Amino acid sequence: MQMDLGAILSAAQNYREAARAALARRLANRPVDAEQRAAHGFAWIATSVAALEAVAEWAEGSTNPLDAHIAQLAFAETLGQLTGALLMGPAEMLRPADLGLTAEARALADAAAPMLDADLAETRAVLAAALAQGQWPSETLHDEALDEIRAQFRRFTDAEIIPHAHKWHLANALIPDETVHAMADLGTFGVCIPEEYGGLGLGKLVMCLVSEELSRGWIGAGSLGTRSEIAGELIMLGGTEAQKAHWLPRIAAGETLPVAVFTEPDVGSDLGALTTRAAQDETGDWHIHGAKTWITHAARSDVMTLLVRTQPDTPGYAGLSMLLVPKPRGTEDNPFPAEGMTGSEIEVLGYRGMREYTLQFDGMRAPADALLGGKQGAGFKQLMQTFEGARIQTAARAVGTARRALELGLDYALQRKQFGQALIHFPRVADKLAVMLAEYVTARELSYAAARAKDAGHRCDIEAGMAKLHAARAAWTAADASLQIHGGNGYALEYEISRVLCDARILSIFEGAAEIQAQVIARGLMAGRG
Image 1 (cartoon, one colour):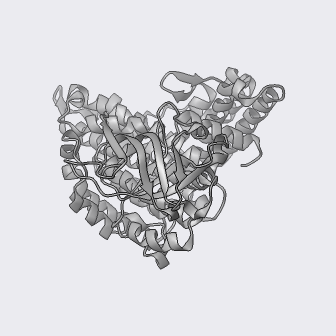
Image 2: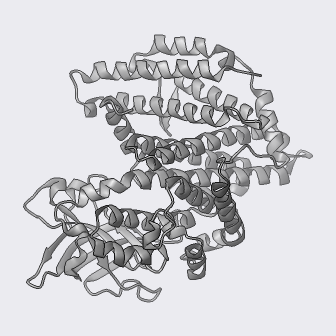
Image 3: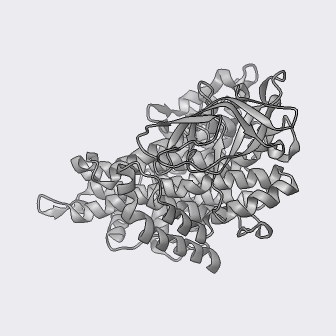
């Protein structure tokens, strides 16, 4: 069935603008926080339309017949939510009436009637049958070098991560040093660090490919590079020349493993309320006091990017500074050997391989030149510069997780037989796989669009937020649907999908919760950015 995606997309874009106008009317006399549901609903509408734009651009001109089927299914599913009930969270749906858009939703439904009124059972069946035959939609980036990078990391993941990841997860083991070294040899930790400092000097799109493929094997492997990405960008954008020359080559080579130390107990996303403090003595050295929590990979790391309050009389963000604090790498027997620093592990459902910790600082020392860029009070602004890249990378991790969930569901549906036939021959199972495929591709292309915007030098906090918001939902949906395909076996720890489900759940929480992303998107769009 051929559909005019361009005309339908135009109608969806008009609906987005109607939602923007509806929110503007509400905000004329009320602050955005008082209209949070409406603002976040608009963010989800805008994100959904951006996802349609991304998948339409991907499908345009493609010669792979599967791509047209995927685009059609992605449009139908998304338009059904826009005109009916848009899923913002597990217990939250936005209906057009919530924004006073009942008439506008009917107009969109009329414009999209050929698609919304169509029975897409055949489309879903075609996609499921193609997957069963080993056929996948197009993923080329029309650049031989980029396609080879994807292939290289896919081969590595298939050989070195997937066969071992579930065993590591069940044992709550750290990713083995040998695997970390192999990842370093591939350039994992220096993708975006300039060549002059020992990195690959590549962009965020390549970072997406690397993170996506490693996360397909295990989100812990895909996330290991996040700390290097954040630290590298912090130092590259805000560091002194001496700090760049010292730290960047070591990070790029995987010789130095950084850890991001920002969050505090009872603070969460409100970084302006941080209380961990650092003060200088007569020699210029810093002494650190306070507590941090949810610190990933804290023990097996060599330098902390530590957000602290160095100006106690200056409230809010303005009193915060970023320190580069060297620390000895811990061991299993002694995870925190640094004087003045202790820690305890937080046991978690998933997202293992690096471990989570609460840290306490009781006079830990840092050298005088630890202050990033030599500037006090600039810490929050310096950190803000990394948010876009970190959120794009998180979206890529979600895309990889969604793909693995789909692979596991497909494999189980092909192998498991009930009532004399493989599960994939049951329409409810095949339908799940088809929709999972469409959502995976849509999330992937939206993530790539955000990465391209970043690589072009544009401000892209909105695009990054959209990519993370959409991809995190796609990963959770895929993991949940895949476990359902597994039935009772999916609930057994021995099956890999049980791990993928736990891993997928964190994606809408860390690097800025889904609610924070929606707030960023709404504020940015209402301010006229995008």
